[in-house]
Image (spheres, rainbow, N blue to C red):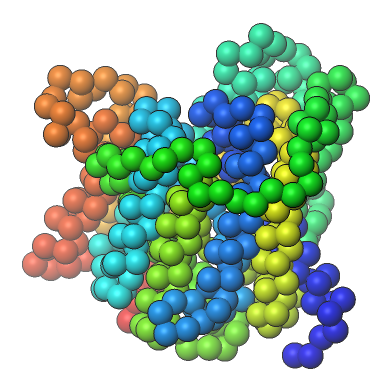
Length: 436
């Protein structure tokens, strides 16, 4: 399809807007939760935007080693938010970035074989894991909605009005809009909430004034990586869940673009994603994965050319090199951010439930897998001292609710579906036909 540069740029900006809220809200949440200064938070937002562009190009540029070669955009998955906050607060930023680097290297190593490992991660496993992650994120959202944990005005009427007002606006926009406007509802909610907060005297513009116009990314700017087993295991599980989700995106885009996805294509896509994760750790940003909302935009617009996505990636890189743009994002008040987070984190839970909807609920085995894994994940999260008396080498696998719940789901799935002499279908007929 031949298009003039203006149309390519316009469609590229549309893709940026569709994923921008998801791209910037992750560094805002994680940076705030681990106590970054305003200057470092501005850096984190900027480098994340830039790395989204770099990660996208890695997937677009298909070669012998990596790249799926489809019009796909990459960003940080919300699946990684809760684990990164937990690791950053317990082990420090160095361990958080070390675990990202290690998980990315593991993804690159297993990329050739992951197609064969997917059977250990059916919807009953991935759905349970994503549901657990979403549930653990909700308290973060509610604390922010009230003004941020430890804030002097925590729970004040002004904070509650901003938080619930932002959430209500997003809901109304979803109800009465369609297509592109709906896809940027969260972004518009953040903008409107921040404008309202400005007129209430709750926005400080100093960070924008002090931010520079140009800043080059620096490796290990926020911390030198350190490596601990539990964080690495946690982030590897997150990466594997993301790979399963990315596999679905690859096949969806393959159908849209009328391209058959081969095992070699999948391996190239996985390697590109793993490389993006490693670069994310090196440049102190995040693990990167496919953004499904942009797949919907490709479907809606009918424009399948990679040039548009290259343009979007270019815009992201330019925006990431300008700290003033990142600083504008950091002025969003905690209450406004919290209102948007309730919607977005609720969507993580909803995504987990959607994955579980593919499961054959007539099977008692599947019900038990979901019950035990979600129960274990939530239980360890709510009662973190449950395994305090166990030896350290065992606590590595039990102290984190996401790890405990995920391993429970994987283990029970193997027992009930992989080792069973008479294997029962673990998912619906639709998924069975896809698998065959």
